[in-house]
Length: 446
Image (cartoon, rainbow, N blue to C red):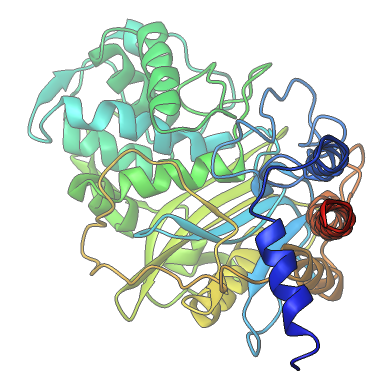
């Protein structure tokens, strides 16, 4: 040890002196090489539009919820011992998140822009519901009902009849009545004004995938949303006690009117069309379900936002357009996601965050603790590798037509790790070069 110490200390002292020009030049060159290999913060951008839909404007840098959710494919980071994401999910896009913390537990193509059908009524409610007291009444006119699309779902509103706002909202949430939506939109000023305000509300909530054309979700060219945005709308809505009440109501009496024979009917019963809530048509009701909204149109297929509460934790699952062709697939796949979510919550690293600007408190739900993340020192490539492996095991990473699967997340994080290793090696080489040149310089000085 005594033979090693003198030159070692000389080397340390030498490093404190100004660098000779040759050594400084070499160190700077090595440093620049190392820095050039270090990527910008976050995963590499996915190729293509990143969402599998034409006209998508989101990017990895700007996508709501974080860069990982902007990449195609399945994303989940469960801790060791936690089951993989359910297999056999055929939906084009889905997401499961914590309504209180806003953390996304898992997702597939979260920002893929797709027709939302009546799930868009959640954004309509976020926008218009706070405007009127439930006891406010309105006498419906012919103009209120003039611009409803043919084939729309209707609760049965009649011109000349007077309805309370509470009745109208039950018509929206239970019967998915486009007639109730249009009456409320006209009360709000006009359909066009309401559409504009819905678009502004979506942007305020950080839901940038949504383009509103009709307030009721009726198929219109260019009208799209995403699994991510629908979760944002539901999370915001559940913070409103009226929203939470309406979306969880299974059945109600609705004011009547005149039947086809001219007879006046005082009232009639309506039932919520969300089968996961009511158990209708062979669907098993989900324990603890609190709504939120289902939908169907020719272009959208079946869509669903389902929120459920268990042990003080509320989760939101969004499912868009299952492709399996199995009856009640949208409800079955939402059930699988909620089951997995309650088992994995608190034991998985978040893959993104819902960008709702509302306070993170959910009506009737106690706040759950933030989900623990992995240690900060963990290699990002390892985490991405595990996520890719889990997605592969789940058998749910195969994309829809025109939406190529890409392990961009794994490639980006692996590339990041590789760059750090190479950069670190170059930095060490630069240090050794400086050390050698110092010692040569020191020998000449002596």
